[in-house]
Image 1 (cartoon, rainbow, N blue to C red):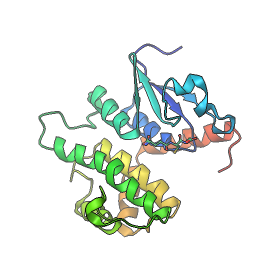
Image 2: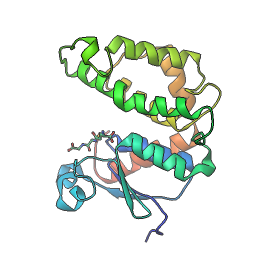
Image 3: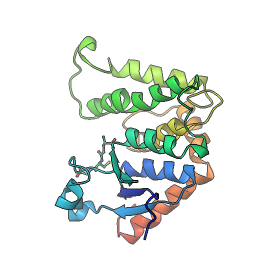
Image 4: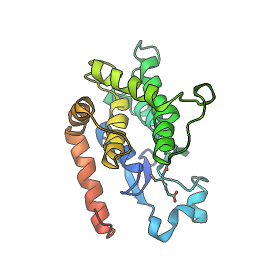
Amino acid sequence: MSSPSQPVLFHNPHSRACMTRALLEELGIPFEIRVIDFRKDEQRSAEYLAINPMGKVPALRHDGTVVTETVAIYIYLADRFGAAKLAPALDDPDRGSYLRWLVFYAACFEPAVGDRAAKRPPVPRSQSGYGDFESVMTTVNDQLAAGPYLLGERFSAADVLWANALRWITGFKLIDSNPQIEAYMKRVLDRPAQLRAVAADQELAEQMGLAG
Ligand SMILES: N[C@@H](CCC(=O)N[C@@H](CS)C(=O)NCC(=O)O)C(=O)O
């Protein structure tokens, strides 16, 4: 039985929800996992649609509220569990850059990668919220080159998001990797909390009988 202040993650070990588990591990807080089994279509059950009407994971329930969308969950958790210092405070000069990189992921990077993977014909730059794929990649690569983290010397929840996203996006070969992406992923993903998250999800996938 979870305490009321313990976050509950609606999760599947073969999904973007792994990025949220990675953050929960990094925050070092107790949390509960509720598995949503895609093979049983549990994401479209009435019970789950009442939590996330989009029928998608992750979703997070905490203290009587539900948060959906990975980036919103990141902002929520890193602020709520501030003792871990993964989010710059509201009045910290790094706050703007921190929010920028979190939102850039969902607003520009994922749509750019998704459109390209689906071979959707590009629309004129001025009609696309992300401009074009090349500008997105140049922006990301330039920031990673400045490093070592997105906020320079300061590690934050934005790095947990980006390193985990780059892991699956390069893993599925949706973008070409390069030495600086590899070095960045290693820097973040070799952290003990990140290794714990991967091991826990591998174990869960095995328990569920999922391959790979
Ligand atoms: N915009 C959402 C995307 C969530 C998403 O696409 N989740 C996928 C797994 S990676 C899902 O739940 N798929 C199940 C389905 O659509 O049936 C976020 O960032 O959290």
